[in-house]
Length: 394
Image 1 (cartoon, rainbow, N blue to C red):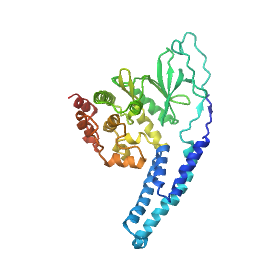
Image 2: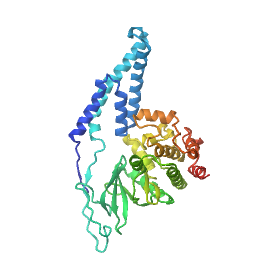
Image 3: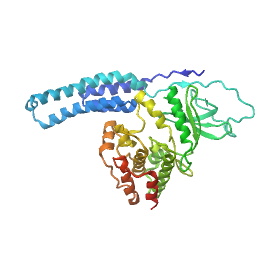
Image 4: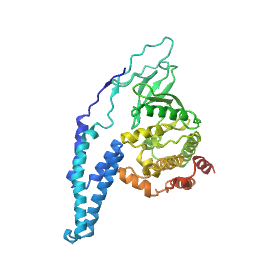
């Protein structure tokens, strides 16, 4: 049986959470939509996003009325009552709401560190690659199943990713998932990953193994040595025309292969595109749908706001056109170094995704038309990933 170390928030996290909660008080409620909107993003909670929208309506009505009339006495009485209630709702409600969320904000994304079970070593089985003597940091996992952990590669909302070695010494990427605690969700996850293993390996990282037993479910995929597209652009800047065209063609081909296998990625974004020595590789396909039902019960969102499609935000059916929309947003990021719909508050980003057509002037002329078509707000009017490939080639 595995045990785990409890992790407590640091003093700095508590101080930041308290300072965040004081913003509605110090700003007379004007900052309430922003603070609660940030809480919705940080906690991955849809209901806090709804609350942020309500606060936005309240403080927005007050601001518009204050700008429209020179004196408060000039405001008609019914409107004055509504404006006053809106201000009090955003001010008092924001203070109480933020105060209630302080411990949740301080503890958010802190995970218990499990201790690995004792495993006898089998004679004749290699547990590391030749000459490999890396050790995990103190307090970090040493084993995930029969994969020996070398180091942590990254951590996100779905789980933590580790570089590990298989029993034959091959280096692999192991993703340990946090939220699959329900048996039904685990079986659904296993089915989805099994389907994802049938995806052609063109510009994708192959899925090698999956386990839903034990304390922490995990998936094992081919290790791609290289930065993510997000890291590459942040370090070296936007891609040039040739690099952007190659990226667009390879990732569109990867999506076409994923869709052909009956899979919808649902979380296509720059951090899920790895730039290996042999070109771009798309990762994390085939797991978001399995996590979707889990997020409905935990209140978390599947997807990353600046790269989500309109149908993901409105609760409509999510299919391959959603990935095409996210692909176009990712290509704009690669061309500009900025998310197509911004990255400020969650409500503001959601509003732009639903209503605004982003600027495509930074794209090469050959890509503007197809990227613009992929950003159509109506899913049924977007091209398929295969059509995108053909448009780029021709």
